[in-house]
Image 1 (tube, rainbow, N blue to C red):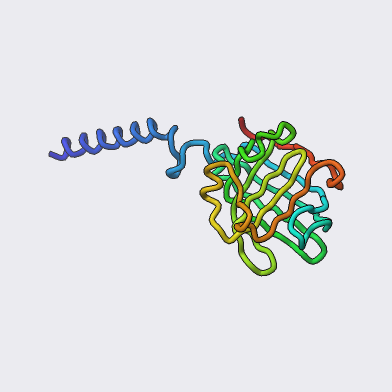
Image 2 (spheres, helix red, strand yellow):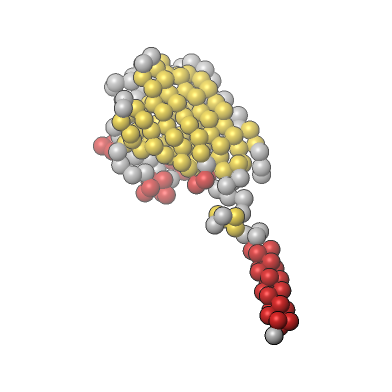
Amino acid sequence: MKKKMFISFVVLIALLLTTSIVFADEFVDDVPKDSHKIRTKWNLQGSFLSQRDPEFVGQNWIYNIQIKEAMDGEYSKGVIEFTSADSVITAHVEATKTNYLYWSGYPALENNIASVGWAEYKGEVYNFMSIYSEGWIWIILSHDDYADEWASGGVFQGAERIYQLLAIGGHYAIDTYEWDPHYIHD
């Protein structure tokens, strides 16, 4: 009896080990394998004059983008900060997409990285959507959920926008927008 139990136990252990090895390539902590690995690091800094939102038009802003873009953008993390005098917008990245649909129709903006998450500004918490390319930088703050726009490749529309900063390359840019991803994994 003990011998049969021991053999059954050994067979069970062997099956469990074999099963875990077979499925180990697909998931890690219930996340599809490699989805959470960092594909690209974004460390971008510069400044611009905003041309959106009457409160901000003509105001000089300094931006600092620190994003770790995951293989699956839904696992990306980071912080984007916009500073102008005493005004600071701190955006906490929860997901990213490269070559985001909203700007992909503009040839000069096809290479872009979009991000969404939550942001702090003037003591309030907002949802945000942001897009960065070689030619533009844009952030929109809203109280609305971004899920539908994010899924369709759009952005917050008119009345949904509480605040926004936008700079277009050329004479609006103080610094040139540098497209400088640091590739980690392909």
